Image 1 (spheres, helix red, strand yellow):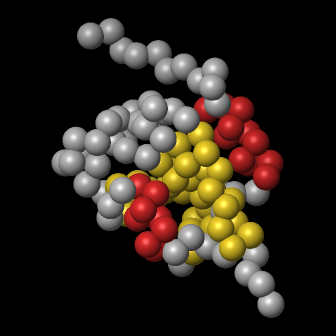
Image 2 (tube, one colour; image 1 turned 30 degrees about the horizontal axis):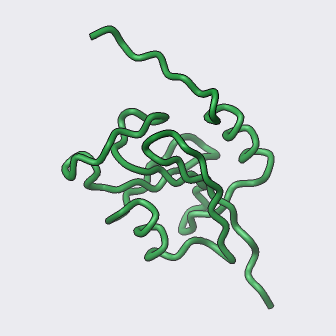
Length: 110
């Protein structure tokens, strides 16, 4: 019996989007490789969660263009209690549309 396929959305610091596909939920080592270090779970809402580098700010990683309060890459998925699950196709499509190449964030006046 094969594990279910999970698809996550990786948002690089420069704003590039990349789908990450895994047979089953992402393993700890794979999540750490994607964010470049120890992971921190961030609940983004009832249907959305993120894994980020817990030391991103201390390591002075570049700020994420989409999620400015986070330094480094962001992996989006679903929080299912003990499991960080992939996103359904409909949600992936909405996120890609919202944060795709035409995404612009108005920066505050300095």
